[in-house]
Structures are given as structure tokens and as C-alpha cells.
Length: 120
Image (cartoon, rainbow, N blue to C red):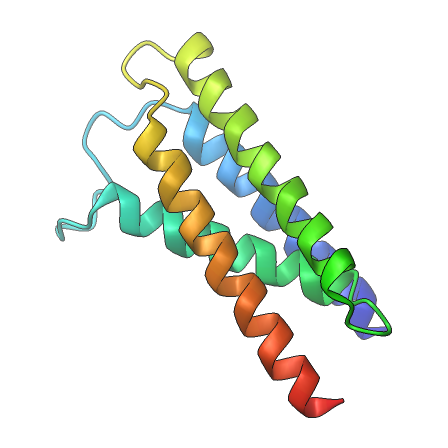
């Protein structure tokens, strides 16, 4: 039952990142606090990667499976950046966003591998 919960969270985060990346934000986040766009990218992709890792938790916690999932999330991030450059008027694809996404994915992947090796 818990596996379904993680799947729903991962799916919701995937959709939220796509929508959030492809809509226009004329007034920023609207929360009155200036947060670096790159920090949001790293944090968002760290959460996204963690949620998918918890969904498809490899039974043996092998590096290959974890790396493959991280790679899939990375490719998703690149696709979102390309779509952002093509389909939005006031947003553009940014290579530094891709680097921030990669940082978040790396943190999540390393954390997952270290924590679950110790639990196992």
C-alpha cells in the first residue's frame, strides 16, 4: 500500500514541475521572499528524484537501478527546459537550470544510496 502512496506523490511532483516550469510567472512566486531560481530547481529535482526512488525502490538497492532512475529524471529536466524555451514567451531554457537540476538529482541519489545501504 505504501508503494502506491509514493507513486502518487512522485506523479504529482512530476506534473507540478512541468506545469510550474511552463506557465508564466509575471510576479515571481508571490510569497514576498526572494529565493534563487537555482535553489528551487535543485530542491525540486531532489524531491522529485527521491519520490521516484522510493516508488521504484530497487530490492537490492543496486547502484545501476538508482543511477538509471536518476538519469531518467535528468532527461525529464532537460526536456522541460527545452519545452520552456519553445513554448513560453517570458521564460527561456537555461543551462544553469540543468546544472541545478543535476545537483538536486545527485544529492537525492547519493542520499538514497547511503541511507538504504545502512538500513539494509
